[in-house]
Image 1 (tube, rainbow, N blue to C red):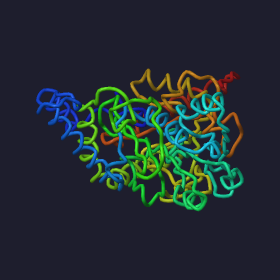
Image 2: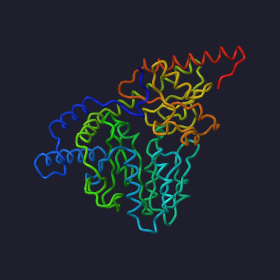
Image 3: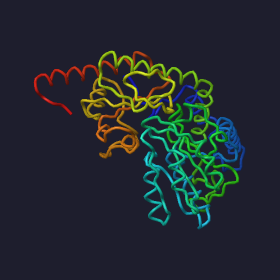
Image 4: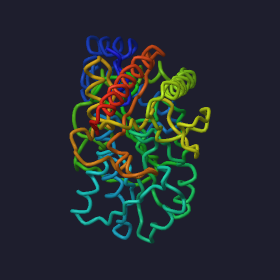
Length: 399
């Protein structure tokens, strides 16, 4: 199998597996228990909290462990909104957020919050001008995804956060796709809250973390909760948390080297596609990649592991199934939004005709991705292109 869907999930690393097994067998106490076994488990969680804070450039006391990115998004946004005064009940987010936040906005509207959805420009970026035009006196919270899970486009949060700080507006970011892929420091980004997930960085599924800057007011979604400083109910997942942080510690020293490798593979993919005459178009032209006729002209920041592209001639779902039949895993977008028939807002927001969304595919790379994997995908796409050409010569059409 050729796996090119690392943005959906990753296999657990050896470091994470070893940590999970060791803690499951040796430190299985409940962190709320008063005996020594419980205290030992609490000590490990405290260590992990401090280590994760160090990796994020964040204060330890602002880290709360959760079950993953979706729960982090939900708990952070609701807790922060509930901590705001009644005069600041206006919430701003964007149309290109993860499905978990898009669904949350419907709930918030239903319980009386004012919600504004900001559209990106035709490059997929939320500009300071667009954000400024929607700010009000009663705006209390803004949530903007750091890196888009489908296109890989990175928002310039530092430019946006400075506008919000002057007005006392809280900024949250969903950093699930950027954490472990590009350097992240909450101080440099200027964010007040952040969501991350374990299974995107070779840790176990069912674990994540939320960060809320100490000093920012919040109220728990579930009153009376006594786990994770009142942020989240339920017994703390000590083995999962340990494995999550072990995976992060093992990955972080290598992200720049890995990123350069992903960029080289992305360049190889588009260069060879051009040489083979494949009808491919990248959704974005990264500033660090060589310009080619296939590239759009406006460079924008991208996470290195995600390559979104249009493959014209067939609908993307058919191409994905053909790739799967040949043992290649790619996707037509975010796994959390699969099954929905409407085109992704992240794709339709970009420049080009709306029907481009029907041809969108995502290739996402990981530590084990090689040039051979790229060539295997190109071979399948070339075969499909040739089939279409042969059928077109006989007068048939395939869309």
